[in-house]
Length: 333
Ligand SMILES: Cc1cc2nc3c(=O)[nH]c(=O)nc-3n(C[C@H](O)[C@H](O)[C@H](O)COP(=O)(O)OP(=O)(O)OC[C@H]3O[C@@H](n4cnc5c(N)ncnc54)[C@H](O)[C@@H]3O)c2cc1C
Ligand code: SF4
Image (cartoon, rainbow, N blue to C red; front, side, top):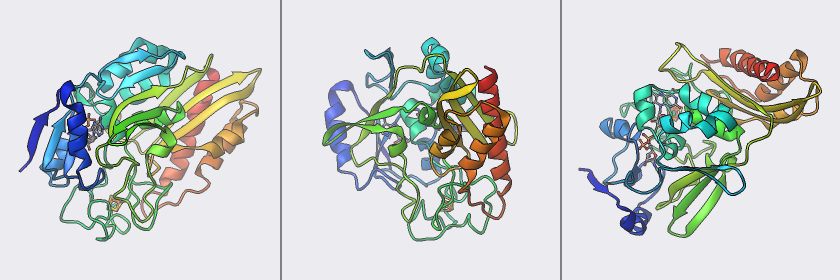
């Protein structure tokens, strides 16, 4: 049986204390925060998540998008994906984030889904959602059915012998390229986590997906001030035009000065076990001519360490072409 509780602002500290008693904040947590419910409730119906207590945080005052004193943006944890994508500051200054969110799910789901929930959405690996199948992420030590099974949509970067699941988020790819900071409140106080440090590689602990500890709840995300004059592009390649997760995607924030690449941030989606920032591709392009040959070099660098599975080798070339196309589009600005 699950106990659902609404958390009012006055109860926030008590709610954190309750959640802090949980065994874990990772897979199998016995206390869970609830936002839009588009991930959590699905997984509860499948018995993949079985929390004893569900703390609904929708009544907390975390639903604002505010300009920060340094000219950046503060995005509350419960801001709906639709509201974020359609905010005029986001569309003007962080266009890659708006594009990424609008490429995901459907209008109805985006109206429910929240910033924090999206950061913590779970893999779409079919075996993770099927309790009859072995899955190290769902149940430690049982094995990985995907390695010898259906792995066409799964990851080629950051995999381990224990898990090859893809992080499915579009929003996170853009936030990675924008160098967002995730703000957390927990039993030990508040902390700010750079985006690249938030999600974990699967290694031999695929059930641990983030650095969150029991009682931690995400309060907001901040974006640094916009990069003046930058071109921002997100492209998502998938099996059908809408309502489908990425096979490969790319987010780019780029400045071109006198034909040369200046500021450059690159992240990939659909191919990594976490949202995949590529410092290798950025280094390959920085200061170089913004031309097709260098864009291809950057794509080669980004996928150099790719390790395909039996059915997803095609993703290597797909991701390279995706990135080249995004860079070309941004350069043509
Ligand atoms: C049919 C379908 C298609 C989809 N397609 C796409 C797609 O193409 N691209 C894409 O990116 N996404 C897609 N999604 C996923 C969707 O974006 C996520 O389900 C959504 O963003 C999760 O947000 P939520 O608020 O509903 O999360 P919830 O389900 O409420 O929560 C998700 C997790 O986050 C935890 N949590 C929530 N808020 C907090 C907090 N403040 N602090 C700590 N923990 C918290 C919950 O405990 C839970 O573990 C799809 C989903 C569905 C159902
Ligand atoms: S890839 Fe990961 S999520 Fe999928 S079956 Fe293997 S361990 Fe489970």
